[in-house]
Length: 175
Image (cartoon, rainbow, N blue to C red; front, top):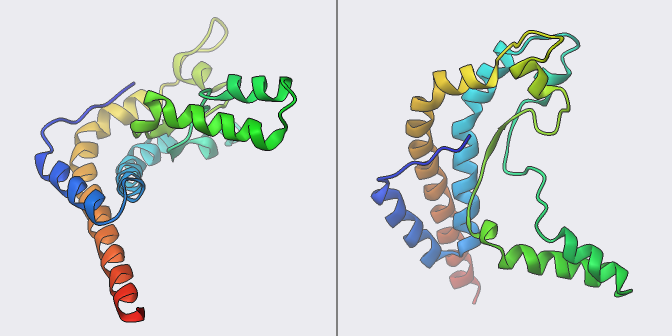
């Protein structure tokens, strides 16, 4: 499930200012941290809704900027097959990820990650009835996520700008 927010001109302006005063990586990290903070209430609600047997699934529900990323894996394997060594293979993987379209987007995932039984709990199977937890949590919190995201991203941008200002002041004082 994807979620897109439009009409954030103020944040776009703040993002551009942050990129100019720091770097695109700093701005991207601030944006990602803000998105992750905004997603935490949905994850918490999902943890409350999930059917608990041993608690493995409940503990696995997280907000993360990482999910299995296949980009660059074929380049990594090809470099190893050519006998270029581990260092060259890692360089090939990183290069492929930098060049990919996915490298310019920011994605945040809310859910149980790679738990093999998560979808069976959510949707059921021929042997088990469904016990939805992610969809109801998302439906209950999606309106709040948009508002929380604006506030959290603004807060993260302000923190990053303050860090950049302190760093610039230290550089000015030191040399």
